[in-house]
Image (cartoon, rainbow, N blue to C red; front, side):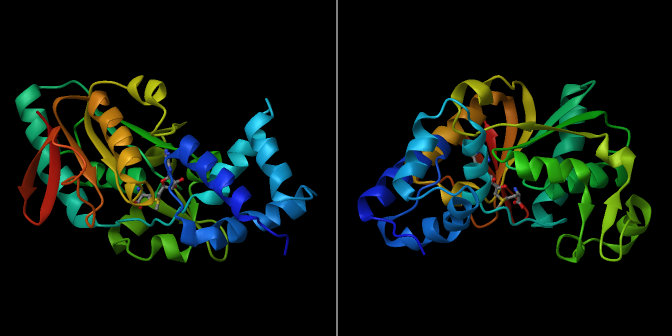
Length: 273
Ligand SMILES: C[S@@+](CC[C@H](N)C(=O)[O-])C[C@H]1O[C@@H](n2cnc3c(N)ncnc32)[C@H](O)[C@@H]1O
């Protein structure tokens, strides 16, 4: 395997942090080697130093997109941390509908990976008698174009599908290959996918007046400063009184006091004051 000097590791690590918010500590040099060594071979790049220069100084941003794909962890599946989604569908959406008499509710899955999270919510909203008549716009975004393309294809294997209740499987999926199932077009049509980097202030704040934002299981890869940046951007994108969900094992406790935490059942939801 090609050698990664400590100094170059730090250059790459700092570059990744500055562009994505993802923080790789000194002890995780192997992380960069594991994720990037094959790519250097594929591209016939002779050293990590050359790769760093390519990323940093090339005006063509294609390699940057590949980097985003290589260094992100895209683990996700349908009905993940479903207790939160039940609170969203059964309580918050009907409450917002009642209070605001909205024509269209605006939801955003802000690190959606291959699409399982926004599609789960879309299906749950369509299935629930209290929400099936609610008109909603579902924006779904990720930093990686590769996962977004897979989200748009909406073809899933056993791992992604393992938690889906039978009734959803029957109603919303069709078997497309020996191992894969494809989501129906009526669910696919409910979700709009866009590439958005959460630490890109301008881009994130271009999306406004959201009623509910989900930013689950992504801030865990950031340090405190990047978490604050991403969460502040999302705060700006929410309407007053709107709600933010982060992952069940995550907390904003030592990050920001911008939000009012609300406890609903076993779920914490962060409300914009
Ligand atoms: C572990 S997945 C979580 C997916 C889904 N929210 C869930 O909880 O199952 C984290 C996702 O965050 C994305 N991500 C990482 N850094 C990001 C950034 N700066 N901006 C937007 N998305 C980012 C990754 O590409 C990845 O798809």
